[in-house]
View 1 (cartoon, rainbow, N blue to C red):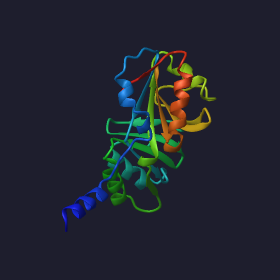
View 2 (cartoon, rainbow, N blue to C red):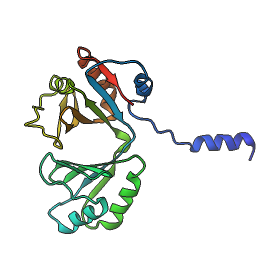
View 3 (cartoon, rainbow, N blue to C red):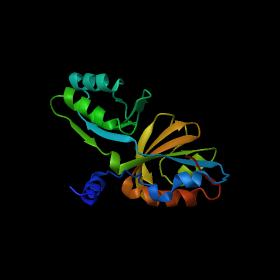
View 4 (cartoon, helix red, strand yellow):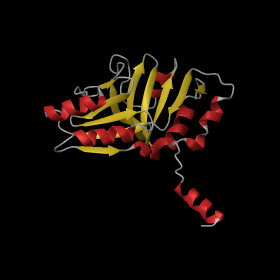
Length: 209
C-alpha cells in the first residue's frame, strides 16, 4: 500500500463528532467580555438513551435500577440523578437517560445484557443537545418563550416537562431557583439559538463554556 493510499484510508476511518451548535462557536463567544443577566451554556456531546418498558414489571424495574444505580422515576414529569446519570420521565413507559459523553455505549450494552422480555432502548445522542439557561432573568426569558407556567410553585427543582418553546419542542427541567435545562433536538438547535439571543437581548446574554 502506498503512503498516499494509507493516508486516504486513515482519513476515511476518522469519525467527526460535532455538537448541534458547533457552528455558533460558543467557546469563542465565551472568551469575549460580556455582561448580562441571562447565562447560556451548552452541555454538548452528552450520551442520550431513550428507554421504554413496563415499570410495573418488577424484573424490568429492578434490572434497570441495578445497572443505572438509581430507580426509574414513576411520578409524571419527575427526574432523578446520582452524579453518573440523569433519568427524566417522558411517559408512563418511557424515560430519557442522560450520561457523560462516551459512557452511553457501555450503559446500553449493560442494559441489553441484563434486560429480558419486551423493552426498547435507542441511542439518540447524535440527535439532541442540552442547553443550560441561568441567571436572574432566565425565568423571564423562558416565560415569554413558553406557554407552560414555569413559576417555581408549578415547576419546582427536578420537575421536567415536554413543552412548546417558541415554535419548537423541548424537554424543560428546572435545576435550581434561577437555572433550567432544555433538551433540544438537533433540527431545532439553530432556531432556538437565534431565538434565545433575541429573547435575551433586553437583559444581556452571557455565553459560558
